[in-house]
Length: 307
Image (cartoon, rainbow, N blue to C red):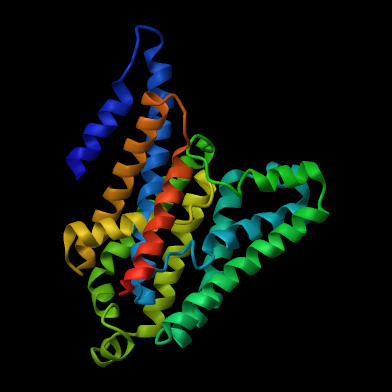
C-alpha cells in the first residue's frame, strides 16, 4: 500500500509537467498532495479510533456529529467576532484554540454518551445522530440571523472541497496530525484491550474511562485538522475503515491504524488525480465519495455488520 501511494504521488507530481516554470508548478502540486495525505491520514486514523471506543463498525465521528460540532464552533466564532474579526485572527492560534475547544467538548459530550450507552447500540446511534442534527440545526438558525457576508464565511467551511486547501494551516496541521497519530500508535496495545469491551478491559487492568476520554480527544484533534483543511466529510471514514478491516483481517491496531491511513491516502490522491487530471473536473470527488460511503453505510446496516 505504501508503494502504491508512492507511485500515485509520483504520477500526481510529474504527469503533464511541461517546460515552463516547473518549480512553481511542483510547489503547488506538492502543497495539494501534502494536504490530501494529511486529511486522509486524519480521517482514516480517527475513524478506526472512534469505532474502537464505540465497539461499532457503523459509527464514524462524522455520523455521530463531530463535524457538525466543528461547524457550530465556527458559526459561534463568526457570531461573536464577526467575519472580519475571525479572518483577522492569527491562523495558527485560531487553529490550536479550535482543537482545544473541540477536544474538551467532544470528551464531555461524546465521552458521557459512549461511557453510559456503549452496551445499547441502537440508543447510542440514535443519540449521536440527534446530537449531529442538533448541532446542524443550531448552526442553521444562527446562519439565518447573521449578516449575509458573515454567513458566506460560515458556508465556506460547511461543505467539503478537496480543491480548496488553506496552505497557511498546512504545516501546523501536518505537525498536529503526526503527533496525534504517533500517540495513537503508542496506544496500540491498550486499544487492542479496549476493543474487547468494557468489562474484559477493566478485568485486564485497563483504565477504561481514562483511555476512552484520551482516544476521544485524539479523534477531536484529527477531525478538527481534516475539517479545517477541506471541510466536513461524512462517510469517507466509513469506507477506509471498512477497507482496512477487509484487507488486513486483523484486530491489531498496530496494523489497522497505518492501513486505514494508507487506504484513505490512496483513495484521495488517486481519486483527485482521476477527477482533476483525467476527467477535467467533470465530477467532484467529495460528492462521489459521500455517495459511495452512504451506500456502504446502508449495506452495513442491512447486513447487520456493526461489530
